[in-house]
Image (cartoon, rainbow, N blue to C red; front, side, top):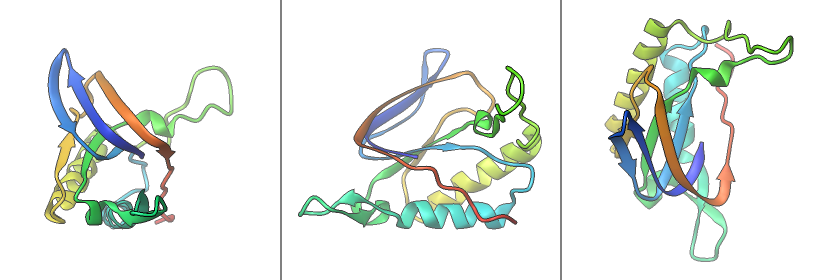
Length: 144
């Protein structure tokens, strides 16, 4: 995830999602992931104190700022490059499972009262963002 002042995603030149201040979440879904991991991740992301307070300290959560999420599916996060020259994506969930969990993630985040914009699942996307800080964090769920 990246803390941003603004971000957007387009598919074939068509804007599919745009936010002002908030977080861009590049969401990879693994073979072992399920709804419990998605809920854990949403709660973690929304509650992380990574926005600055009046004193300039990272001490405020996305929920407290009223910021938005731009959620972009990205199976390449599961690319294993330890062997050879071509990444292996064996650990990534099959597309039908990943789509279901991606949509569950988005719907659940919206249910928490957060503005959520998205890319388009399995599309070739262009993501533009202005990273604030810069702040970029990797957030992995505990093993199922």
